[in-house]
Amino acid sequence: MSESVHEILRKVLALGTAVMLVVTLAAIAVVKADEKKPTRVAAATQTDAAPDAGTGTGADQGAGSDAAAQGAGARAGASAGSAAAAAPGAKGGTSAAKTAAAGAAGGRCKDYNPDIGVFCDHILAGGTTVLSGPLAVYGDQGLKAGLAWQTYYNTELAPKEHLRQAKLVWYDDSLDPQKTLQFVQRLHDVDKVLFLGGVTSPEATASYLEQTKFPMIGDIGLSPKSWKNRYIFPTAPSTETRNPLRVKVATSRLGIKSFAVIQDTLPAVNTDADKKAWKSGERFGPKELDYVEISATASDCSAQFNRIIQSKPEYIFMPTASGVMLACLREARKFSVQPNGPNSPWLKGWSGGSNLQIETDSCMPTCEGMYSVGTIFNDPRTSNTPQMQAYRQNMAKYAPNVDLTGFIAINYYQAGYLLYSLIKQAGIQDNMSRDTLVNAAEHFGPFQTGFGNTVTWTTTVPREPTTCGYPVQVRGGKWVFDSQQYCL
Image 1 (tube, rainbow, N blue to C red):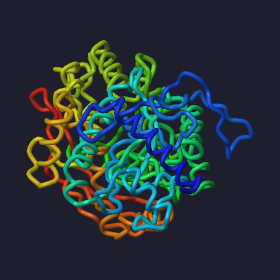
Image 2 (cartoon, one colour; image 1 turned 180 degrees about the vertical axis):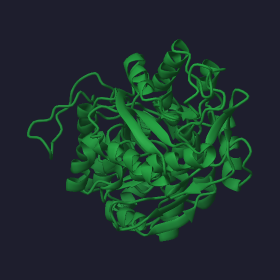
Image 3 (cartoon, rainbow, N blue to C red; image 1 turned 135 degrees about the vertical axis):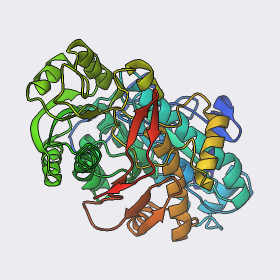
């Protein structure tokens, strides 16, 4: 037996050991990348990167590409997980060792390439998330929803359709852009994953993805760069679409003539596109009276809210992130500001929040009638498409404590379904590589997902996967999804 085959078998056995140590669900191994000691990673965008990334729990520490790990994402943590579950692959029922050896020897698994995370029985994906701090709720929900899809795929779809399994290497970067970049470099150079499902800072990693041709598929869009990079395939509308679309909805529903914005921001993200996009909302009639920024992790909105109400806008766009949005509403109560209230007759309405029930549980009755940031999805509680029915069933089975209405949870579940559909439509199940994946994504759609949104990805950059969305409003203390879709 050749030395190369011995090496493959060693890696496969190491992977099998890791899986056996951490099995929590049938056919799935979940291993969070450990952060006990730093590992030097070659950097394409800086000369000396030494991320605090660790070596991988339970896996052979000398073979980072074999770390069998899964995880998922966040609204501000951008799940890496759900998309990874969607990668179909080579058919076959042999053991991991035999299929790996067959691939190395030129057998039926012709796309075998451990240098990019393609094995005969599974593929590796990667990403970063955030599981601590004010935005951890999104990381937790993205994680669990991503794993719900991945569990469903690995335990039901893959065996039934004779497709290869999917595994994910992920890191908690604590919402630190520098750590995000370092972990992405590690995922590429050390863990050797096929693609990324999402990261917390596309802003910090965009240049590296272009330089290495490292695709990210399913990004929720946490930076203007998410839509302007050939190797990032986002699912949500861009800032240039989303912000004026919210102005259009407010104008259509309430006939507003003015608005002001409290924009929440993520670390190190250039907000020029946000400012420009809000200003462009004036084309629907209302005038922008003021714009102020606040950190998405802030717990105090007093200065920002006090400034905004000085201009007496007819509509206030508040932050999307739950914690900071609730902080702004606390200031509203302090100043007795309420749409059509006795102390604020100039205010016709406002919006903010991300469709989570925990938001309305905390803000009632102040937020009754308030609109959220909106959604690209149908109401998962009532939609009866096959995809939404499966979403409800799988979430109940694999992630019973997750709020179904949060767009982060829906997105990172459906991102897995998107990739699964993309690969099958392109016919690259047995021809997996970064190049074939990018090519398939660049010629995908318009695709009706069954979740209420349509996704279109082309070779044209900037990409705009969709230009439509649904208003979501608090009624009776619950977020109610509108059936009317608004588009630009």
